[in-house]
Image (tube, rainbow, N blue to C red; front, side, top):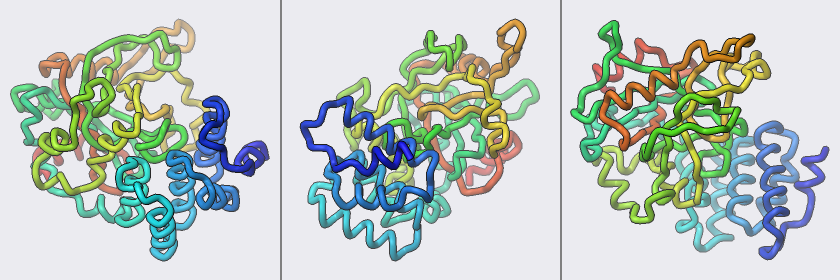
Length: 337
């Protein structure tokens, strides 16, 4: 009821205080994350009357999830392109329009050959590839490619890999604040630690979206890092759009959050973030000390691979309704399909 009251308020004027606009955004984020069917009148009114690109993109994402039929997609796309003449230059609206025109599930099913991406030079830097499902509730896995181009192996001789979770608590699209980790190219800028108790003391990888730390990024530079076969596959461009939209502070980190609240979900044992990539960790409930850490293994592997700096590539490989397994990773690296 509280969210509904907030979303029922008239559209905010451009000169509204930043705190008021943020409260409205948080109400929409909460509505998207918790109420997938109950807020249709409120979200539709926002879609038809609001002029703010971020709120419009959030309402559009809610509405297309509520009704993903081709007719409804065409209706939303026509409404968007008619009302906003500059939608092609606004990254959140461009991402939404692209999804409306080319549904992500259909595009993922037509993914380019993975081997092309795995063998791309990426300027000779070490690369972490984070393989994810279309449905981010299923756990992904990350592998490390050495600066010399070879993939790191584990003690058993199989490719090194660790669990990596790319779901945000809201589940919003990756171009939006606190949305899922965007697909595409990140820079790994450094290894650091944080006093954030939700992240914990394990070393983190500080990631940079295009334009976040380096204003010299251009779309041409982004394209040049990708093999030609991947440049028109739009999911891999999400990180570019997110950087243009001003998303920031996305890390690859461990987690000290209690997983108990999610014990009845598909990802039981994991904890969603605000858009970061998280690796599995366990903590002794008596001493508070860390028992296991996939994150520490990932940081160590990156160092052995010659980084940082380096790149991290998030790629949704398919829409299977199962976690990515170590055996599947071995097959992906061997066959590259």
